[in-house]
Length: 333
Image (cartoon, rainbow, N blue to C red; front, side, top):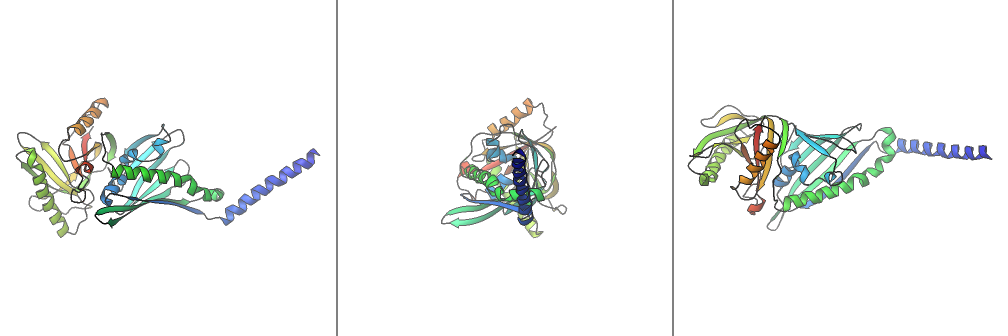
C-alpha cells in the first residue's frame, strides 16, 4: 500500500515538473508591464521629477513598503549617467539612466541582485485641456525571462503593476501639490557638464531676475544659432551678494564650441555635490541654504566653491508661484 502511494506521489510530482517544462517552452521569453496616468503639470516639471533620481524619495512606492531601504546616488545629477543604488533586507539593486529625450522620454537599466537587467522606461506627452497643460505619463518595465522563470511571466503584471500604479499616483501628487520643507542629499562622483556662461553683476538682489533674463536670452540666442539642444534648465552661480551681486549665468549643452564675446565655454563643477530643492517664488532661499549648511556640518563636509541655483520651473508655463522649483547645489569635499 505504501509503495502504491509513493508511486502516485512520484507520478504527480513528475507531472507537475513536466507541465512546468512544457509551460516554459510554450510561454514567452520576455515580459512587459506598463501603467499610465495624467498629471496636471507640464512635461518639463514631470520629467525633472523623474530624471533627478534623488527626487524619487518623495514619491516612489517602495520606500513606503520597506523602511530598511538605504539609497545612494552617483554619476550625473540627472539625465544620462545618473545612478541610484540601494540596499535592503528584501534585496539590493541599481538603476542607471541610459538614454533621454528631454521632457519626452527616459530609459533606465534596472538591475536586482542576480536578475538580468531590465529596461525601465518613462514616456511624457503633453496635452492641452482648455487652459490647462496636462502630461500623459507612461511608466513601464520590460525584460528577458530565463527559461525556468517563464511560467512566472504572467504574474509579472500583477507583481509590478500595483507598485507602478501607486508610484504614479504619488508622482502626480508630488507634481501637482506645492511642496513644503527641504531635504538635502549628497550625490557623489558627479560628472562635470559643458555649458555656456556669462559672468556679470548687478546692484542689488532685487535686480537679479531682470539680469538673469537678459543673460539667459543672450545664451539661448547664441546656442540656437549653433543649433544646440540644452541638457539642463538655466542656472546661476553666485560669487557674492554684497556690496553688489556677482553671478555667472549659464545653460548646459551636449557640446560647446569656443567663446563668443562675453559668452564663455565653461564646465559646471562635478565631484561631490549637495543638493536641495526650494519651492515657491524666487528669493527667500534662506531656509534652503540653511538645510544645506546643516547637512554640511552634520556630515563634516567642507564647501569648495560657489553654490549655484538651477531654475527647474518655467514661470511662463506655471503661473502658480508656489509650484516654482529651484534646485540649489553646493560642491563639497
